[in-house]
Length: 392
View (cartoon, one colour):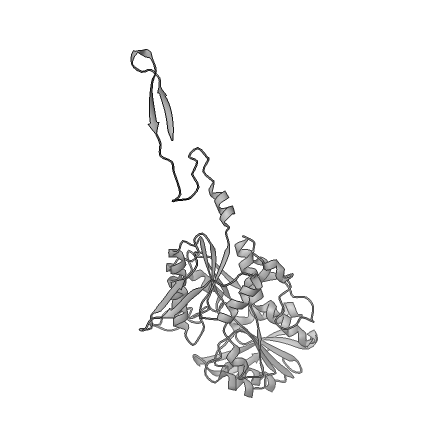
């Protein structure tokens, strides 16, 4: 390439000219020639061309839930190796390029390997940040250490706060959880927005199949802290009343005494809680309600930890049914207890991912009132019109 430049105002008043040789520019050998005079593309046009896609990565905390969310969204899970070195350290490798992508990590802190699943989540966030993902959202349906949210005696940690600090140190763009044990845990995250979703709509849709007469239905809160949750369920189901159980706890998972505040004679009781651990407190509460005159007792909870003898206790209890979500893996528990029913959170979390990606409000997920009583088990909540809406 040659170009001639004419210099004005040269010696003797005339114009001097010089010839400059310019080398052609190529991407690489055999590639198309770059036109230096063409305008450079804007960042917006580059983004439109390359796409700002949703990418899903599932950890080992709940692989089945990650696959279900993937099917609802119509977005495949990314290929990733989450293995262990010979000394037990976690080894992570994400196969595909995620630069500039909107990445969602699906990883609850599932027991019994709570610490391993937490460490996996931290390293996945760190890996994606190092890989230049544009946005990294941690979908953590079950937030581990959530019950240790305050100091109840000297020289104990506030573990829920410590976990929040660990997560924030990895710099996630956002954290999405479901039914935190204490809503104030969101305040432990000082720089990261936290969305605490409710699973009530999904569980209510299942309970509505029983066609409970509203005048015979009473919602029971197993403690004073869960009254707000019980009130929301009672309002949506049109229940007759809300009853509270006051308990005196000696230590974790051990209750000294209980008393019922309210009338439960000749009614159907539904105990509403955020989690079930060993099941001892729940079974004692059900027996107390039966003793006070309840005709039937059901229990619903978002997180089914089912530690120790929980499955045997529920099988031997007076409860008709115990309903939980799949925020934690439940396949093995379904084989142990015929009273256990599991409802999927995949439609709720898939809709949350779709709204976050498209910069829409999540308020519809909080306030939507379920309608109808013929909904089948595991069907999507009413704010999801059809599966095709999830194509991103």
